[in-house]
Image (cartoon, rainbow, N blue to C red; front, side, top):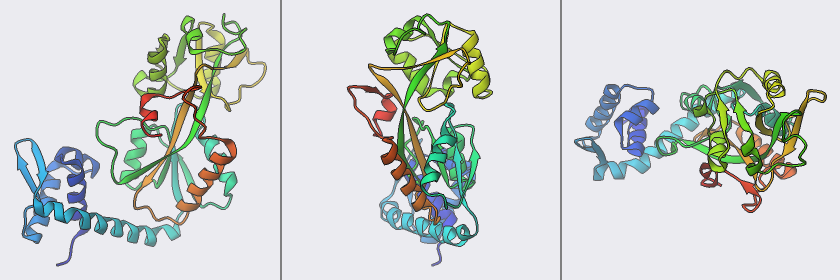
Length: 314
């Protein structure tokens, strides 16, 4: 028999999630449309693939036998599509991140491999990037990942590429401005500020909760210049930025290292597991060379701090 890839893909995702609602969302289908695809595949094969009892879903013995070869079929189909399409367009690379740095990171990497055929775009956040990858709107993404309400998607690959030390930025009128360095405990007398909703700032939220630092979050992130203007005029506030974000001289601001421990901001790259674009391998090699050249992956638990979610994927 000839296998239609759409029902096979629907089976694979549902088998990985064992939840029709989550699988339907990942495939951008209604649950009714997903059920129809599974039923069509079961009719064609002449066997049941899933046991449905109440709210639980499990694989039948036939489904368990079918899963491995079905995954191979889906990967082969993705590779065939990629081989046909990608010779005619650049690798679509997207970045996101509230710390004003992802485009600088990409620039550093591209300098390692200036002939890369890539096309850049911006995404408003991690979940938007995942949606773009799943919907094949983009091929590769760079940003900060965080925990999901589901297991990490088996169709996507994630790799840690940079652990970026952060510094404190504050007004020169702040009581802390005269220090040579600041420990997280020192920052409890000030307030960490960032112009975005708390739920979008998992790294900063983890930092203030871990070290008992007051925080003020909210508003709209209008870019680096308005961000620095706010800090200059509010001595009670400070914020955290990656160490290589340049603060222009004469702005009335002070930038101080944070030590004992130094917080590290983790950057990951994410791509589809079946991606075969010819630029993907050279781009990943360029990230590896940049990490080696700039010591991007240095981590010492005695000197550094990472949120729990980042330590779990080191």
